[in-house]
Image (cartoon, rainbow, N blue to C red):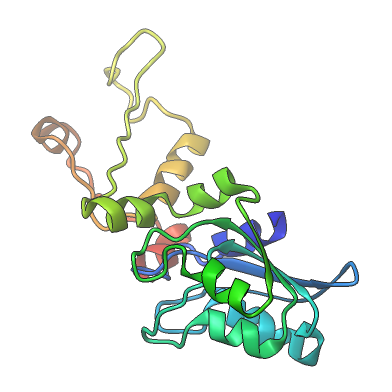
Length: 208
């Protein structure tokens, strides 16, 4: 499951409005296929892993970070693909909060004789999709507050452009690349006239 979590994170923000998902197929202790959801409208993680595994998927265990979808959208339901491939066991981390899928996979797989284990590395899997889970359940934007200050409580120091180091500024760029909008106060605009753009290193994430 740790490997599936790593794979899910690779997609960055390209999956919106879909969640980030990673999947790994294991048979006789060996990984026979893996994948992650790369972009909305493209194959889901489970389907990508099944494609890579081919006939080796039959009788394998599927580790996936999110409950497999069971509804028709831009792509067919993953539950159907998993059943057709002959997967023996499905292990997933997070339950899907989308009402169209919530709890459906367990029922479908049980009917087909596929053993299901849920809640493996659940906290880590939930964290991958905090924004997706928040928006889906509350219909509110996922807001991140960024605050920088000196050890003695100052927000700015005369004569210095920054009060943060290079690592902190790089992390801000990474976070900013995953946001749809950046809001600052009027004082920041007057004092700093910030560009509020994403630096080139992280730009691909913002454009996805």
